[in-house]
Length: 226
Image (cartoon, rainbow, N blue to C red; front, side):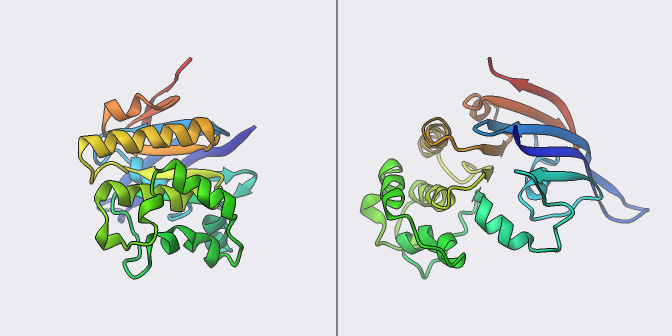
């Protein structure tokens, strides 16, 4: 059964004189445990697509359904709560809170949902990501590669239905970029985490189990590895 169903979504910006079609009749499903890369050059619509899939933006037409929940029709009705509980985000800009320690940044999604952190899983995640020695430090005191590991830990801690990663290696050097991609692949393989990642880098797409290539707001190809 598909954990994500995307049904004919279209998204436009502007008015009649200067209309821009960011997404044009996009449809696909994602199965639980897939590692999907959305590949394409800047301006192809991949970041807009991820914003829609993550419940951060609306569409003009079509539907997005995550684990049976229609986030399109419910966008203005409790979407924030659904998003916080079920979708993990990793972005190029990190978006860590400087006044909170690494540990508190990781725990924050659970705290905001008024839930209790699974301590054994917390320990498993920080060990898995090799950040045990920095959890009491602050974002300003750690390196970029470490910051992205913290972002991955923050996404994983709530055991989301889907992790959405928008150019997660864009601010990293090659070594840290390779390490983050290896960790994402391991999270997919060992933890069964469903991941949807957008990138312009064809080499990064090689780690995925499936690649959708976008051009001008449309799907040009959809290839699954055997």
